[in-house]
Amino acid sequence: MPEHIGVVACGAEGPALCYRTICREGAELLGPHAHPEISIHTYSMAEYLTHINRGDWQAIAGLMLASANKLAKAGADFLICPVNTIHEAFPFVEPHLPLPWLHIADVVADEAVRRGFGRVGLTGTRWLVESDVYPARLATRSLEYVRPNSNDRDDINSVILDELVKGVFTSDAIGRCERVITRLKDQGCDAVILGCTEIPLIMNDANSPLPTLDSTRLLARAALLRAVNGAPAAPATPSARG
Image (cartoon, rainbow, N blue to C red; front, side):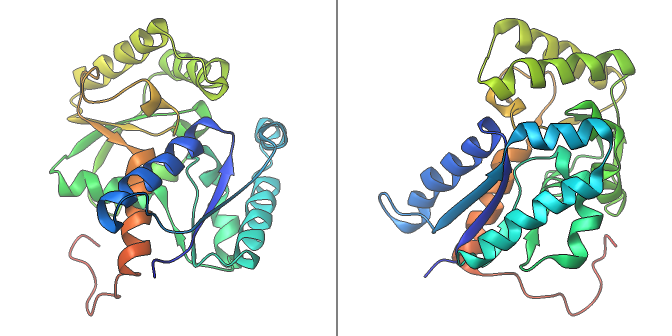
């Protein structure tokens, strides 16, 4: 039997895309209409944003851990969180986790290596772009990264919070994202991380000036494979990438 996936969520649109991806692609591995057992828990996004706006990442960690513990009691075997921004609180979360946690930035960084990229642009909320969530994971794999400039950070942040998380998808938002990604391309990036789980709802390889690393679907696929195949065995020797 596949393992039970626990989803620590915040907001609706990104986690819903992650959930749909697991369910739809699960059928390709397990047969028609089949997918692993999935449980999702989220506190109100408003509660998360209150703490984020105050810079209180320990409070964010408390919400994440409370969700994690509820999911553990519901029988989950491991956890994922299809919300990039709140991973800034992960250092406060990790020591107290009740279950293994598949980190979204690790999944994305591994895919960047697999596809042979060397310098990636980072998009997402201003909090995410200015954090160490992705840079720390990219650095361990010898990957370079570029953050958008301050104006572009504000522009993408507005697209995410004023539109995407509310389920509003416009051609104007696509154009704004395209312009930001073009500037990242001009700075030598060979791919772009869609580091907000809502951005893949409007951006993809068909309309992006750079190849995309879709954090939402990559996490969903990694969780699906783990649920079906079990956790990978620990390597006998340290990874060559460090």
